Structures are given as structure tokens and as C-alpha cells.
Length: 152
Image (cartoon, rainbow, N blue to C red):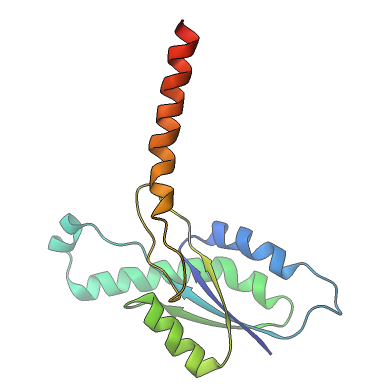
């Protein structure tokens, strides 16, 4: 059985990322165990002042249930096994625990990147987005230079 750990935070984006893995001939497909890990969005500092811990946990549980209900039927239609869980704590440690529990598993980071935020890595060797920080200022500088040339 092929084990695949999928970290997700947006159902539509995750389904788009998983689509190439689902397509294939019947000979290529084998039993797959999908381990879906929902990474709930962080609550802002201002909200957390007014909401107690149990209310936050309930909101995270409802949020993850909604995401799982959108993704799970698509993955189960081929007879694959799906395990759902909610991420709590560092994702690198969670990946190690899941690989120890389920054996060798591929890891797919299907979380939607947000502008101005670095997503925490899910494996030890995962490269960070430090290099990508310069892409926006470089693009802005390029547009500025283009506007200067166009105005002359």
C-alpha cells in the first residue's frame, strides 16, 4: 500500500494539487492510504484575546471537518483509504511521527502560499522561501524602470 501524507489548508487548492496523482490507468493505480493533515489558519492576536481555548478548538474542528468533507469523497472513489487529522504543533515533528506510525510515506505540501507569509516546512530538508522574498521588490523595480523608459 502506498502511503501519502498531504498537508492542506484549502480544499480547492489541494484538489488541484492532487489531480495529477489521481489520474492514471488501472494498471498504474495501486491501493493508496491518504493521510490528510489539515493546517487550520491562525487566529489573529486580537481574536484570541476574546475567544477561549475550547471555542478555538471547536472552530478548528468544524473548519477541518468542512475541508475534509470537500476532499475525502474524491479520494475514496477509487477505494483508497483516507485518514484525517488536524495539525497541532510543529509540522516537521508531526511528519516524523506519521512516518514512524505508517512506515515509509511520501509527503505532499498542498497548502496555499499566502502573500507575505512564509509557510513552515513539513520535512527537515524542505527549502524555505527566503529566496522568493526578493521576487516582488525585483518585479516592482522592473516595472519602475519600464515606466521610466516608457515616459522618455
